[in-house]
Length: 326
Ligand SMILES: O=C(O)[C@H](O)CO
Image 1 (cartoon, helix red, strand yellow):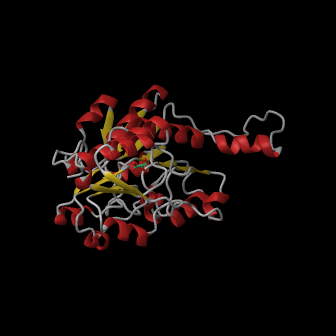
Image 2: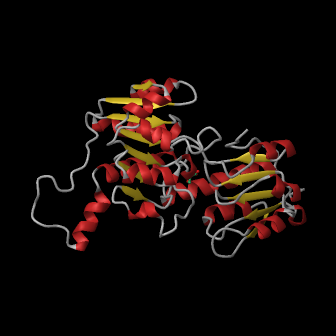
């Protein structure tokens, strides 16, 4: 890449709070502009800035579609600081020859850890129990009070046995489930390492005591959990979603939880995000909602940021992207 300051490529970073290690990396060979407002960059600002740059550092809150790419005449590469890329129209990027990188692997363990934490929290009613301590609901020890459900001897179902799903499965094995089953677009060789059985989606729904969603959001998985699929699940099944909110129909989930069609749900992702504080799901004791923190450890976020920057630098200097989407 040219070291001449006048020829340094331009990169727009869409958020103020991006870890400094990534900014320093980009600054080493690029001219950076960064959105400095609060929260996500407004669409109009993004459109204006993207028109002038060679590289774009974006987040999962930035919608990158054909309309935006139409004005991004100089854009060569996009690095998203996320493993998921459902916010980006991949075909439109490909059509225009814009390179695209994401951040797989570096967040696998953090996200899998959070998934297990949310599963245990929901199964053993931890937030509900802690609330009882605060609000005076803790009376004398009671044989059936605050009883939850154990992983031991259960059937755990995983939808999407990719990197994160597999890591979740590994972390759950020491809890001694009776069975691990999974559904995926295709059978996974790695499933053997966790002794997981490939089953149909129907069987995953009807047999899982715990059903964990770790698949990507695609046209096939959008709203996959709805009235019809909830009706196929066990009445005490626990649903965990740490992938993307729109895979679950929020209204149908409310109905399923409040009518006892399923037992409980733990969500790290919702639709929309943030979930409005007056959303009716938040009135339910059998629903634990977290604010999309699957990958939220400092080290993981720093590594995600640097990988997004490395993707951009590679793309700008004609090198293969360390983590290319296509
Ligand atoms: O896609 C991702 O990277 C997660 O949802 C946020 O870490």
